[in-house]
Structures are given as structure tokens and as C-alpha cells.
Image 1 (cartoon, rainbow, N blue to C red):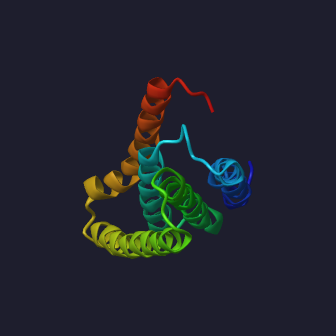
Image 2: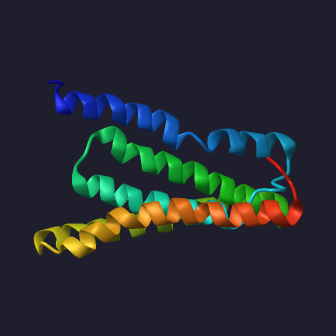
Image 3: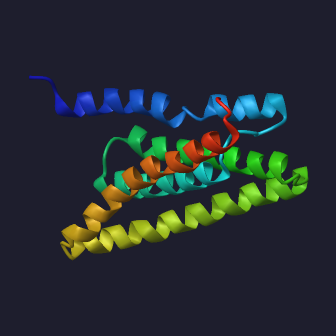
Length: 160
């Protein structure tokens, strides 16, 4: 039988690379084209929240370090894509976009720390419902994040 710890470490690094970097091509494409047409601002916002809750859950479970980093990287790139939306669709200046990016990152970081304390409190109180909620929320946000994108595609009949 394989060593569970070793398997967790190996597959967590695969997850780190493949899941967390999945938005990087979108960010690059938007940057190179200079437009974010066809990309939903709501999708990026919802996915930023998904990364927030996934980070809390993974850290709370004390899983492999790569699984702690994975939602942080995903959220970071999702916030980059979100701010690209504001820059290109709403014509924000570079300064305003950078300030918005820093502000959103700080807010998400503060929320993650606060929610991590809530997770640890629920864990010490043996509140299984709250612990499950932290595990279910990322899934809901990831799947729910697709809905605005499909709506955007339907409205514009644009395929990415």
C-alpha cells in the first residue's frame, strides 16, 4: 500500500500547478489583447471568493502545504483578471487599477484570517455543520462562478 502522506504531497503539487494556474492564460490573453470583452466580471469576483473559502478549508484541515498555496495563487490570478475587467471595460487608470488590486487582496487576506479563526473555533466546539459549510462554500462558488460567464456568452454570442 502506498504511503498516504507521500501521495498527498505529490498530488497536491499537481493540483497546485494545474488548478491554481488555470486562469493565467486568460489573464495573459486579456493583457495582450488590451480588452476583456467576453469575460464576466462576476465570474472573476465569485471565483475570488471561492479561493478565499478554499484557502480557509485547506489550512483548517492542515493538509499538504501545496494545498495551502493553491487557493492563494488561484485567488491572486482571479483578482488580476477581475481588475483587468475594471481596467479595460470600465476604463480605470493604471493607478486606480493597482490600488483596487491591492485593496481587494488586503480585504480577501483579512477575511481569510478572520474565517480561519472562525474555522478553528468551530473545530474546537466540534461544530460539524460549520466545518462542512467551509468545505461546501468553495464548491458552490466555483460552480456558481460559471453561471455569469455562460450568461455573458449567451448575451454576446461570443466564444472564448
